[in-house]
Length: 310
Ligand SMILES: Cc1cc2nc3c(=O)[nH]c(=O)nc-3n(C[C@H](O)[C@H](O)[C@H](O)COP(=O)(O)O)c2cc1C
Image 1: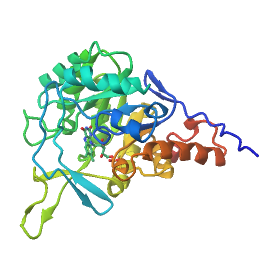
Image 2: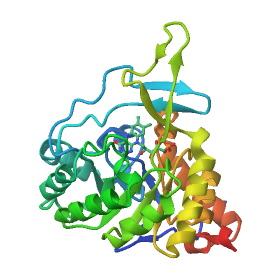
Image 3: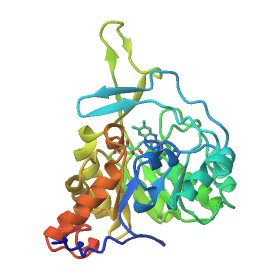
């Protein structure tokens, strides 16, 4: 006998963007997106968030750039990329050809560089449904901090991204106790959605050479090791923002991990490090999420969003 298809409505609303389901890729972990097509159909996912793009081509950090750690990895890729114009010309058409919905992530070292990257996206085709502003990158004008560690700098980079002429999502950092205030600032500055969160600051030291292991010295920790940090960050952000949409990201490897983020207040999730072990992870998580809901009589995703808040 044929199994009945699950009757679950996974549609999710992220500000003015409506996606058929809440499973997205996390920026930087699936290259520029089209590489994924060898493993899964990118069009089945909610959206593909591509690696953060600078206005100009960017070489990234010295190697080694990644290192496995208990239940995760540290990376200091350093935002290597072809620049927005080359991405629009060479990478986007291939990704768009898969039928995927695309989110362009942008970064800069100054507010001006964010503005420039955004402007270069102004005429991008409609398949680019939103721009994710990676505020969790180093601020050249304030050496001590990431943009996302300052209300003023977060406000400025979100405002600077208006030139992209499409919905703005602000990707924030978990490395500050002020995260809820920064989320409020990002929304006030025009973001429709906050993505919570980027990697946790970390480093690994080689005990034989007695030197930092990553080429850049320090890096960002990701994977299951950071999941409870990210769940708490989403929970706190939901308390601060109420019903404003949040995308949860950090250490998700299964549908139940994704459900944890939804219950904490996320309207969607992004899958990153899990793809290094299993490039099909986002598609598997999506299928399992549908089954998880079906078995528990959850007919609409909305029933789960923020439910842990009582
Ligand atoms: C190798 C690597 C590269 C990354 N590059 C970016 C990037 O370009 N832009 C960005 O916003 N986040 C970047 N991230 C952070 C991820 O998008 C994600 O926020 C973080 O890894 C936590 O999720 P995860 O544990 O599922 O990987 C990167 C993470 C990794 C592991």
